Image 1 (cartoon, one colour):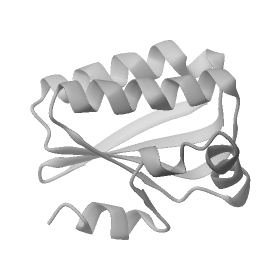
Image 2 (cartoon, rainbow, N blue to C red):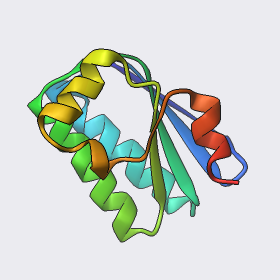
Image 3 (cartoon, rainbow, N blue to C red):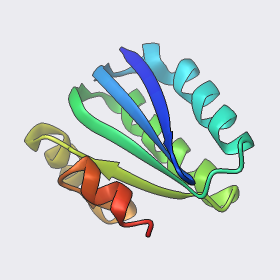
Length: 111
């Protein structure tokens, strides 16, 4: 799993690649904490290249959601594939996240 991020005005896009599982928990928490410390208005998790997330990955998404709420940072998810959308539906968490089909759409939603 690789984590990269790039700033677009007051929004930071965090690009995830591979599987979101236990191996990515600590690096992702560190990245989100650092981004929040930079006084960002919003974070978009670009999930376009994520093929799967397990229970630890789901827990991580919930942690990111809660951390963003506590720090008054808006969170968007972008580019979820069918498998990832199904996981959110099965766990009844689809309404807990502001999901967008395309990255550009998610970034523009902050305007």
